[in-house]
Length: 382
Image (cartoon, rainbow, N blue to C red; front, top):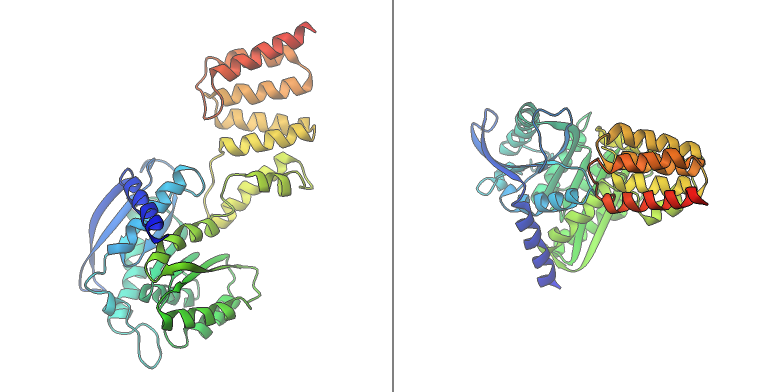
């Protein structure tokens, strides 16, 4: 089993090589020196485009950057999560100092306080000034780093919207402080924590205790998820926790699947088109950026509209597709589908014919357009 997860991790790292990787050095006044960064940009990153991307900060970037960046690149490729900008902070020789805290207050002190300020006051502004990062920020940490990420929750306005805490080495009082802080959050916040059966025993015991307390929190703004993996240790749980955490954080973003179609789209009180609009509005509200319309969701809403015999939804969807994909066969296909459902076969046929001159999409190609043409012509003869 361990070899299986190692293989998956290696595949993700290899896939990650296809994304844009940048190595930079940032001059830090807070740290009185330089700090090396690893930066992965999305495959389709365009510095001139208007869109922005969620920002993922990875502590212990020396070893944690590649598994995080690889998972993000892989899942974004399949449109399960949005494209993200991933930034790893190298700490190989400084992590003990970077993550240090006071022995009385258990809050960042000395070099730990400097690193805290470096990330908040220097690193984030630097990335946002030079890259198209959105306000939706994720931070990832492992053991000492996983404890450290919690300190950013204690600001009056937390710097991050999502926290991935992998086998945290929790400071004294951190469990109680976390429970108190997460209970009164006023902004939608995602918090993921993981341990494993073969995790470091002292860490695991405290993590399980922490989970028991966090599960009692009643705050609709908090989206909390905990995993206790079997057949994993302090290091291998990282490879299993990262994709699970990303799935939780970006659950709303995911394409409409069979479960969502049957349980939410078909049972929605409004029209299928209204469901699509609300889903995309919720995505923008939760994540702070607009999701581009994807073909998978178009297909799902079209099927639901047809199943419910909802001509108005079909017309609105066809116009929306035409607006977003004017040069694609998608626009002709779905407008033709609407005219067919309306009973106007002549207009439907004209649309399908016009579609032959447009660009094919992921699911709609020339063969499908020709098939629809022949079906419509046969129907017109009856």
